[in-house]
Length: 566
Image (cartoon, rainbow, N blue to C red; front, side, top):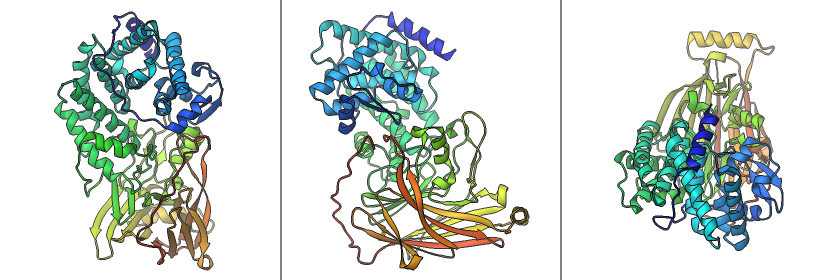
């Protein structure tokens, strides 16, 4: 039904009056990757984690069958990458694929006629209009503007069919962009401005967060709101108070979610974000508010010296917002200078359903797991959401003589094993020492009865657990000090030493790093502390500290290249 309604609206829009030009010369705001653009010019199509090698082939003739591939293709995000290259070959590809899309899909056919993809596509077409129209005939220019007009009218009729949150932000921002830029489209602007302001009030909470708790998605929404505000300002129109207030709430939250290397924390399906994009978006917003000391979209931050730590300190999102939520309660990531050290595995969605499910499980995060159980469990429906969610029962940040301290606890294993997990993290003021303590306890008599029943089902009467510290692929890890420690060497030259007390086992095991824009998961390592609950509790201590001979400051000049096809 939805597809038919979209087709009907697109067909009607294709018969509407066409714009004849731009009200003002558009300026590109979206940023692409030069390396990815070069790959596209050679016929290597890498969309949604799938590579199709088809040199000399029109994009729309590529033999790909996965729906995710075509969603990305019809969104025209690749236009940013070709514009980043900007040479005649890249421009020819961009023009051929754009006019090819118009010829094949311009009257409402194909998977691209949904509101959020149409908004994404409109933004790119307008951002890169000069790049696209350079050298084209007047007839081609008329075709281009007619296609822009049809998509604008389609959006004006169908934006309400987009899902709340990021999809609707995309649809409405695209509508505002087009309404302001195209001649004769002024009538669609006022309703879109009002709708976007209402969406800001509904979806951006008082602390500047989204219901999904996905940091990268928050950055995407923030970028769209900033673009819309800039377009309104340049057109001499006022930005509604609700719209501006949302930008001002989000900016300090994103600063709290920013690691020392400028990248985002990777939680609940989000990635690190393209290099420099977060800082660029914050600068473009004009909001200078510093990060707060309290929770930011449910995350807490510790920082000292060149070290940043970001911890998932709230319940996983549920319902519609939990379709990509992870069982990452109390997990943390740590970055030293420009180098990620402790990470989560990340979203496996680009690598298929099995990887997506595996990436959401607690063992894929840098925290404790009990007998392979995730702290929150997925339902059996479609989509799979977190139905049995861990609840954070304690959040206590304090300042001590040793540094910044944070004690957290959650009840994710109370129902299954009667156990509450608490985690204490202490980061020294200079950022050179991180101390941790993990506790599993059966607190109440009911909890102890549950634990006893769980133990009775085990041949050894022991509940086993593992504490995992996933390492970034660039970290070189080796068992040291006769098996009692792990040394971590960073590309910057820093050496960190991991030690523990109270664990029955210490090992360095294989792990994976699930990174968007790659064909396959990257091989990595993880430190694993193992133990068991023999009575009613278990306590494990650990430390991660820079080696004493590591300098206070290091000139980290080695560049990170982007191996697109790795």
